[in-house]
Length: 147
Image 1 (tube, rainbow, N blue to C red):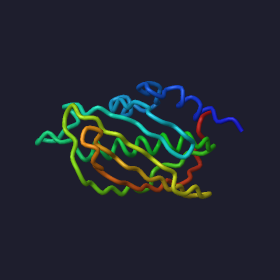
Image 2: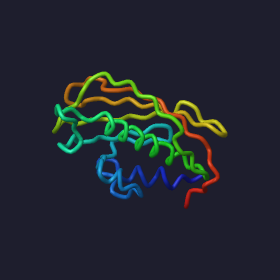
Image 3: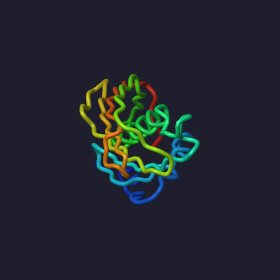
Image 4: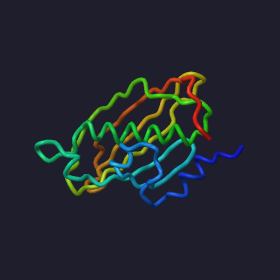
């Protein structure tokens, strides 16, 4: 079975994903690094407006990067119905600062009929340190995804 969403995202490898329907994703300005059906990898440049008062990448922005990538990972599964995020657990370990690069890697852990679990790892590309790890559950809805 053909997966148009997966093929479409693969066409962006090495480029910023400018075709997201999400205004927040446009603000994050992620670059697609790798795409498979069960995992995606994006790269983000930390800009000043993404930092907290001490110059570190804001935890809420990190959470947004994770949630956005988890959403992209869900979309490339090619499912008919929308599965919104129902929870997102994040452990923060190390910081990133303005002008550094953050990598978010997601992996499908479980694809159930009503619940999907996707995990994420966030890495500071400049230091090679793990910044955060996350896990999210998505639950099936009655909303059909436009083709």
